[in-house]
Length: 224
Ligand SMILES: [Zn+2]
Image (tube, rainbow, N blue to C red; front, side):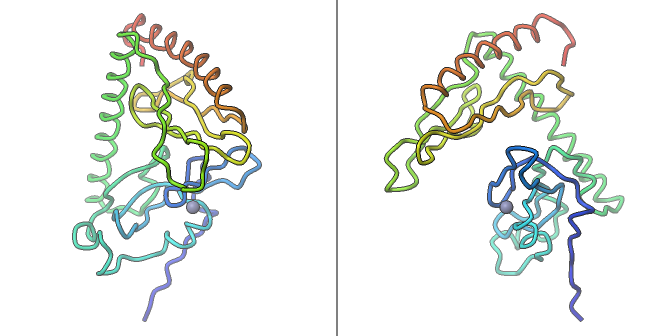
């Protein structure tokens, strides 16, 4: 007999993270939220713990691995191959003592990785490097006349600014006031459709804020 796997979204946390499959991200409280953490099978990447929009949750959250999926041979038996959520990934699955141990290790490794990333940014800020820079994206749509831009945060790909009809839309990283250990130091600054020069002005202002942010961080010992 076939078991029907259901996902009751009312039992999953509401999130404002982007959808791991289609990239949808709620921009205001009025937009439909995304849901997570959800553990789901992605045919190419294997088991992921992340956030999904309602539509992708409908399609992916209950999908089971198939032998001809690219990730099948390598990842079928895994608990998770990647944790991509700000929520507590422990909530994503019903776990056994074994999976609990594996997940706890993955959570610890992710926190260590974030701390290392932050250490790298602190060092770059101390060298006077700018926080946010733009780089022309490789063109995706042939008919698109305006360039899109990758947003780099201390040299690493962070987001993008895309041309949409009459102006650019996107997000920029702004310093977060209270950051817990292992958390990203930014919050998203959403800017409505506007010119690229308006973005550049905003970036200049944000780079000043980031400079102060990291100066404060290096000045106060043990501040995380
Ligand atoms: Zn989606």
